Image (cartoon, rainbow, N blue to C red; front, side, top):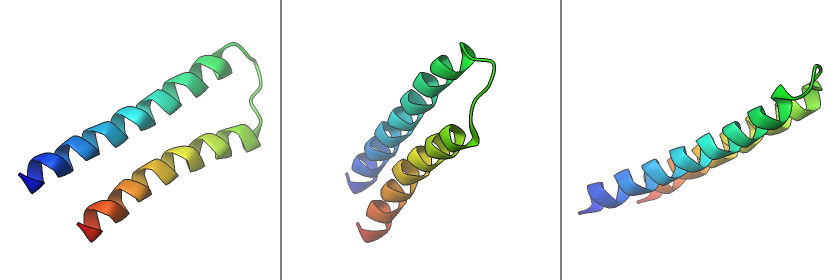
Amino acid sequence: MVKDMTEARDAAVITEALTVIDEALAKMLNRELVSTEEVADLLLDVRVLLTANASSTTQA
C-alpha cells in the first residue's frame, strides 16, 4: 500500500514537471532568443519539483 502511494506521488510529480517543461517550451518556441535566466528558472523549477519528491519519499 505504501509502495502504491509512493508510485502515485512519483507519477504526480513527474506529470507536474512535464507540465512545467511543456508550458515553458511552448513560450520559448515562439521566440528566436531565450535568455539564460529563463532557462535557469525552468531548470530550477523542475529541480525543485523532483528534489521535493525525493525528500518526501526518503522521509516516508
